[in-house]
Length: 261
Image 1 (cartoon, rainbow, N blue to C red):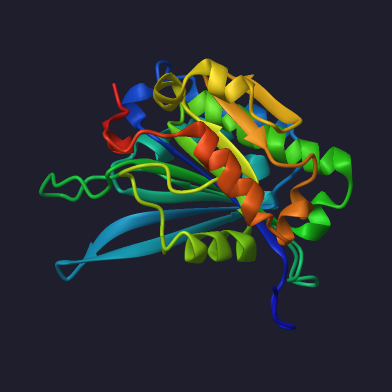
Image 2: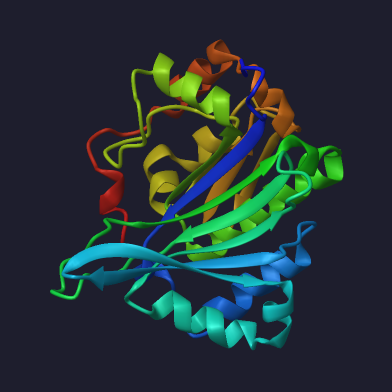
């Protein structure tokens, strides 16, 4: 599935709305706490800002390394970045120049407004990704899933997925969907998170009776994975994915972007 020059990578993404977050003042502190309690660490933070240069909107990146981070009141700085209308993305990264094939990162794409007040994003997203060496054992695998689920609960996400990057592209190709659309649920991936409204649409009975061994309630939502180990997703069982999708019978009458408050 991978070419010789490609690195096996797991990717996850959560979709959420700012207006669904109840305690916005505590968001930064809780976010940092979840990272610090996880099995992963970071040695770099990159903040991307939307700036105007000669009337043209451009992205400016500001990097903070370990020595900078140690001097910061990180919770306060993160809170300022999150709610700054010019912030486009915030990334927490663990990468080494000596080993570029090893990577862990959280990319938080927060909504922002252009100076004239036009909303640029329909919804906000959080992406957690890593190379396979970061989830070499079951404890690290469970740590990745745990961080994903904790972030889903914190952000009150309405939808999320975890999958091997190549397998995810293959799944979208087979379902004839080249990218995520907010109109309806398109497919079943290795790991799947459904927020409160999607759970109400599908029904508790259908979710709890799914023929998978890994499933659990997460906040007001529900998470399930097809196997206990993420690396199993490198060779997706499309028949199993289609069988589960048919059992879920997701509604196509309501757009997922209607699932805000």
